[in-house]
Amino acid sequence: MNDILSILLSYVQLYKYLGLFIITFLGALALPLPSGSVVSAAAAFAVQGYMNFYLVVLVGIAGNIIGDNTGYWLTRQYGIIAVHKIGLGRFFKQKRLDYARKLLDDHPMLSIFFSRFFTAIAPAINVVAGFTKLNYRKYLTFEVTGEIAEVVFFAGIGYIFGNNWEYFSQLSNKFWILSVGGMVLSVVLWKIILNRK
Amino acid sequence: MKFNFNYKKIIQWFLVVVLVIFLIFTFVQIITNVWELKREGVISRRNFHKYSSKAQISDIQSWMTFRYVNVIFSLPLDYLKHELNIQDKNYPNISISSQAKKNKINTSLYLSSVQQAVNKYVLEHFVKYE
Image 1 (spheres, rainbow over the protein chains, first blue to last red):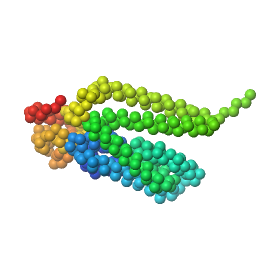
Image 2 (image 1 turned 120 degrees about the horizontal axis):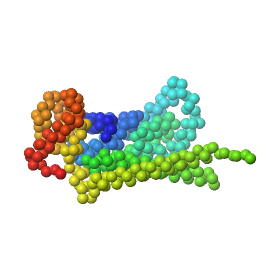
Image 3 (image 1 turned 120 degrees about the vertical axis):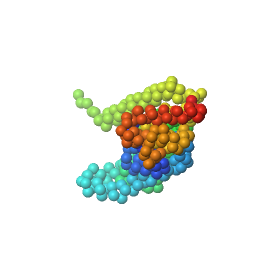
Image 4 (image 1 turned 60 degrees about the vertical axis):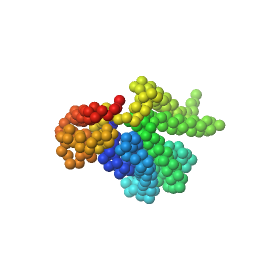
């Protein structure tokens, strides 16, 4: 187990639901924290009687959704202003923003829903969605359903596998990489074939 | 003779090849991990219930708090405090590693003493675990 995960799990054991909420919130907002593994571990603690499983799921979902939406709205309101102030405005031309928004708009399942399962990618998607002012209702729909699916999935691993949650959490991460990578490959190949025709 | 390179297509196909190689690598890793877990008996219908629900002494890790250890092994609240002579007023809401650092003891050694203390209680009180 890596040091960061050990430290985070100590905080969850010390502060329980408050610790879990803060970790999932910060992970969704910007920090590359292994919040999926933390949720699995918290569910395993619940199996042992240390926490309540349903509260773990609720708090995990709440932390993720609030973190995602905070990131989206902060970048939507202040993103472009901040970028111009630090002199990077030339990299964020309207044409590029429109293209990025079109990508998210055309593939919300792949870009928003499935990115919830990858804590390193999800905050970046939130930022892009905010920058490009992606339709909020569309963003919210896929983001909320994605977070519910993600938290229930990882909590389920902890609940079912108990003390062995760590093995299966790592395995599930690789499984998701394979699944989403396969979908991305399918979309890319389909577009290449379409262009040929 | 003129060659007409479509760089965009070349880059597209290069990315496709890289992605395919990466996916194959990930798939092989998954299969290897599953096979290792099966070999260690972690994935086993017979052992599933045993491994998934019961806490083992070896499951105790240095990042765990004393409160958590008390819960999973059904220890009396102050048992480890007296057994390990813990003076910290925050007990049991302290982690094993932080207590080791406070006492300036090697974390692995301190963890081992915690595991021995828990094992002693479990054996004395005939609590069955496998």
